[in-house]
Image (cartoon, rainbow over all chains, first blue to last red; front, side):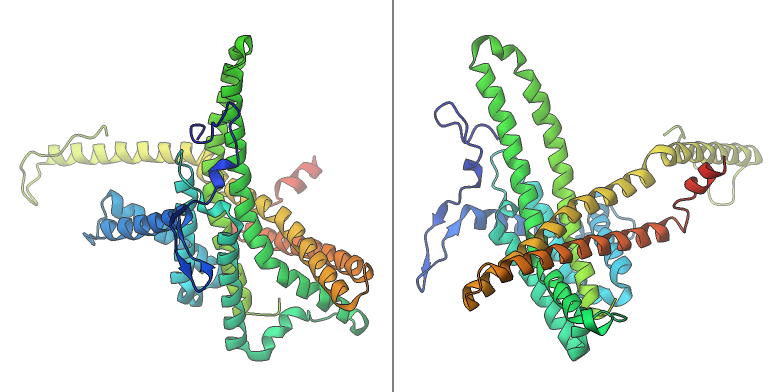
Amino acid sequence: MASEGASGGMPDPIHQFEIKRLIPLDLFGYDASFTNSSLFMVIAVALIVGFLLFAIRGRALVPNRTQSLAETAYEFVANMTREGMGEQGMKFFPLIFTLFMFIFTLNMLGMIPGAFTVTSHVVVTAGLAVLVFVTVLIIGFAKNGLHFLKLFVPSGVPIYILPLVTLIEIISFLSRPVSHSVRLFANMLAGHITLKVFAGFIIMLLGAGAYGAIAPLPLLGAVALTALEFLVAFLQAYVFTMLTIMYLNDALHPGH
Amino acid sequence: MPDKRNGEGVGRGEISPADKANFERRVGDLGKQLDEARSKQAENEPEDSAVRARGMAYGLRMASELVGAVLVGGVIGYVLDQWLGTSPWLFLVFFLLGFAAGVLNVIRGFTRLQAEIKEATRGDIGRALPDDEDD
């Protein structure tokens, strides 16, 4: 991690998030270049598809190690879906499983030193959150028609504060894609900056003569943070998926 | 694995009584070892880590739920202010409404988590509390 940004003594913790155009491309006035971010998304998709296809190639009743890993991933998300939405939620399983695997793989790829963390950019996470938000809206209105708006009008509220409560409910609903995307990107961004800063401390202390003696301290910190970041990488993918399930469930059954 | 392969080359249904007794003893031993290992694992590992992961996920969620709603409320108010020329009143009103929505989000999340834990532990949650109070 520390190797890539050490330009002129002081390592730059933000450098790792820089978008580089690998294949410049201009589509109708929009910059649609193939960037390092796109590259890592492609790598992630290739890894997921490749791994799953490789794992289930035998289709054995008694799975080998790779197959049981793939089955574990499937069952983990399937159980989450069934818990959150019941059996009918399995209709959305392809979307949910794809989201989980994509985010999880991107987060984990970001943990490789020198790799680019796609999920540390709010554009990407906001894109995913808006995808979920729009899906919820479409399914909500398609399944319930205008009854979906009941989500904003809780029952049993006195009529004179109903407008206020409805307004609050609408803001609460609109805040979903915001918190959904901000949480993922902020956690990844902050975690990677912290890692980089700690790694930078090591270099700075080593270059500071006698103070180099305490350089192992930030090294220990960086090691511990790396472990924590692996946990966060998984937890964030888990939280994103869980909330997707929760929101989809609200679309199927509006009115708490 | 403590258990050796039972490879005497004896066909189906041709096990001598001594072999059978030996086999049953070993199966019993293995079962006992398995039970021991399971109880040891149950003491400190799976339940605990699953609950902890859920708790951490919940904690990571709630802060952003609150902030997200305040942000959305503030932005709505600001945009309406710019549009209607009522600065700064609608911003203030919607900022507070956003805060209310944030608190609502957190309360809802907590209620849901509580229901989930209650279901997962089959109402076992909170049993320690009344016991303590009895003393």
